[in-house]
Amino acid sequence: MKQTTLIISSFLFSILFYGQNIGLNISLFSVLTLIILIIGNTNKFKNRTTLTYALLYLLTAALVFFQHSFLSLIANIIVFFTLVGNITESKSSIFVNWLNGIYTSIAGFFHRNFDHNEKEEQPKLKKDIDLLHWIKLIGIPLVFIIVFILLYKNGNSVFNDLISQINFSFINIQWILFSVLGYFLFSNIINPVHVEPATQSDLDAGNTLFKTGSFSEEKLKKEQQLGTTLMLLLNVLIIFYLVTDIIALNVSSSYDAVTLSSQVHNGINALIASIIMAIVIILYFFRGNINFYNDNKTLKFLAFAWIILNAVLVILIVIKNNDYVSAHGFTYKRLGVYIYLLLTFTGLRTTFLKVLKIKNLLFLFRANTQIAFVLLIGLSTVNWDAFITKYNINNAESLDVNYLIHLSNNNSYILYDLREKGTLSSSNNQAIFIKHTAYLKDINTRNWQEYTFANFQEHSNSETHID
Amino acid sequence: MNIPSNIGKSILLASSIFWVIYLIQEGDLDFAPIVVLSLIPISICVSLTIVITICPVFWALRKEKEDNKSLAKRCFPYYAIVASILCLYGVKASNFDSFFVSFLISAYLTTAQSWVWFAKEKRS
Image 1 (cartoon, chains in turn purple, cyan):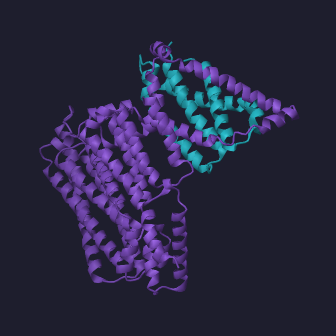
Image 2 (image 1 turned 120 degrees about the vertical axis):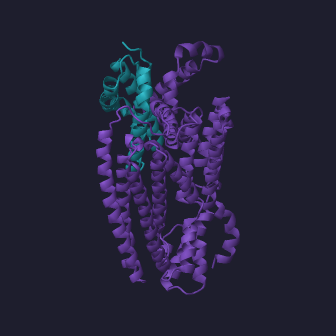
Image 3 (image 1 turned 180 degrees about the vertical axis):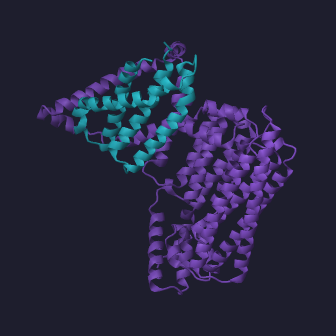
């Protein structure tokens, strides 16, 4: 049953992907993958987490169809690895799921062979059908016959002419080879395997920090004094920085693009260094027994204060980036700043929780990877090219049309509508027309495997847009 | 560890995979007569790869009383992940050149199967 399913799936894999671009095929592949996984691991799909990942996998596959963006494709691939890894071990952390998912996808077949016992399998094989014997019986003579034909071909012109008349062009061997690749992938994932030491270590490790045996009051007192002094000085320094930054923000209300850009990027650089140092210093001091030391209240207070002040620093950079965006519109870099700031903010929050609830480093890593995963899926639901284009056209004080033209085709119709208003330069009008025409051509020459949502919108739009 | 036997089987496997993929991709069977000659460079590559990248893992990382299978289960996942990343990078860097694609796919599959053969050996 499994073998038949795998063979059919591998042919479907070739039908979907051989010589095709990304589109509807990703959605259909996701459904096919889910069917394979359910057939191979029916019981695992009773688990709620696995079902959630399965639904997320279908959602991201649908997003590839609707958004047709690189981000949605990346999200789909990551959810695929997460789902496969989760089927292996549903209780492990998300980053271990990724590790197991990647390992299963590339080497599951080989891993299962470690446990494969030939002596036990032999009688069973012989009872059904001696597959290996048939492969040898057909394969080995076939290989030798082909090699000898090719050798004789060069030695005799009559033989060569006869052999040349045999035409196998109706068989696309590359297509079959591609099916073998599909078979390899599906046979890897049908019974997911796990990276043994990593999965077991992850299952054994909790999130809470415990007091270790070597609890020396004297040592902890010295460490607490060092930590308190350092944290106090760092707090004073960051307060001084924040005050000067707030004054600078209030003094000059408008900047040119270059000044704003340099301010935001310098701010980001300062923030990166500050946050990394903050987290490393906090993790160092709160790595062990100091969490259980009675006189650690001042150190804890200073650590919390520093985290909160770093969060204020994040907010100040958001304000600067807002000014920058409202004046000059969105770009991917400016969006990236927001995403980075959001991740930083959540990173600070988890560090705060780590110190407050006496958690270990693994807690921080688990929480942050989960947040990054959720954020990735959330971000992939937005058509960013269309969003940036719409926002910039409607809100930006100075519009960089060239930047919008160089985005993906997802903003093609919006730009075309802008062109029709007649407010753009002739070179921009021409560039938008070329982009739009190329996009329509691309849509109309797609195979069914490459269809996206735009193909179903295209008919109504093309009637109004083709000159 | 029976290294000569493993290398022998790996050479045959690597040659088969390499030539099947290469001949199919190129669609030109004129290369076929040099299949036998190609065994020499393939043997060198396979032997070096196994001796340099797989055998040291078995020699250096084996715990006391650990058999080949347990060691393979412990170390192979990381080897496979690193090898596949390098091979994918190589395929991309070569701009999907037929020769390199065939070479890297056969290298990946052969080294993985070589691990399986080592894992199935009984410890002497």
